[in-house]
Image 1 (spheres, rainbow, N blue to C red):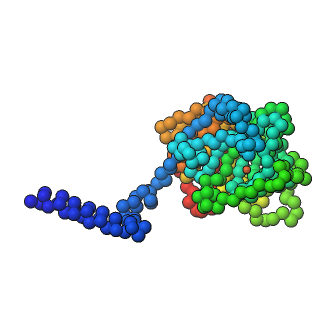
Image 2 (tube, rainbow, N blue to C red):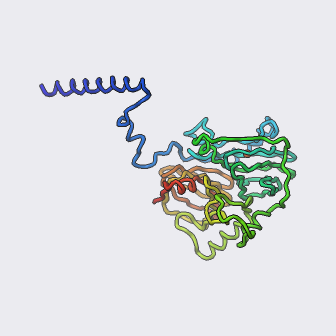
Image 3 (cartoon, rainbow, N blue to C red):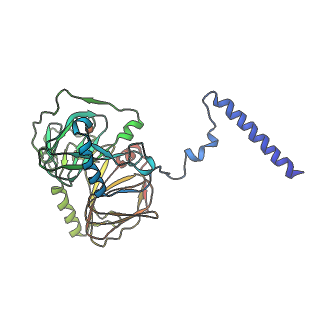
Length: 350
Ligand SMILES: [Fe+2]
């Protein structure tokens, strides 16, 4: 008898619950107990997946875009690197946008500004510029250029070669908070009064202009040039300052307070000696990597990403990964770690 009554009772309970759920649904309410385990997970469950974009594909397809749309028509001629699990959402990780921008010889990308902060990491070409906050920063391969939120910026390429760079923006973060603003200017380019390298010389030389603010939540440096940063990695390598997971690594910092370059995005540059076999690491910040030099692989859980110069790849949050360098290699990386740290939710582990 018991075997018959139990299913009936269950059926009745399920039916009664469903009737209750239907009733409260009309009032835009829902039972937390049905979804609690999905809402409050024991560990991070990222929507994004490991992904890699080969530079050969990026460049070939990007140059084709140069034939179909001008920089002026496009406003910014950018191909979005979309995480395969987040197609249609214009993002590489849940919080960061990544795209590759092309600017052909003689072109300009007109001045505008927006609430989203941006960085450029230069992949190819030399001699194009980004003008921001009155400084006209000439860009070369490996340079790391900042465009803080609401800073007017425009680009131009007076050189005779196409220039390509990786754009990373905190757009999904800003849109998550629904705080997006944007505006255009009457003029196409902004007046620049400060020479190339001005902010790096002023703020990145162990001194600060007297009277510089003691609090600034983002770096005043516009361009962290590769020619300045790369030799520091060499020094670390020679001194044996090589982390077993991250290699000989420096963090791009805000010289005002030693913090990250921006509140929403933080970046690193790391050298891995030839034959480096990294130990496992994981952290809650989904990370976008760019291979600047060399070649190797990154094992993300059971997937192996093989990278060479200018390839871009993504490691999702809280996935175990380890870098292996076939040749001496340099990797640039950027993530939302500063935002997570400010909110007190960042974690790392192995
Ligand atoms: Fe922009």
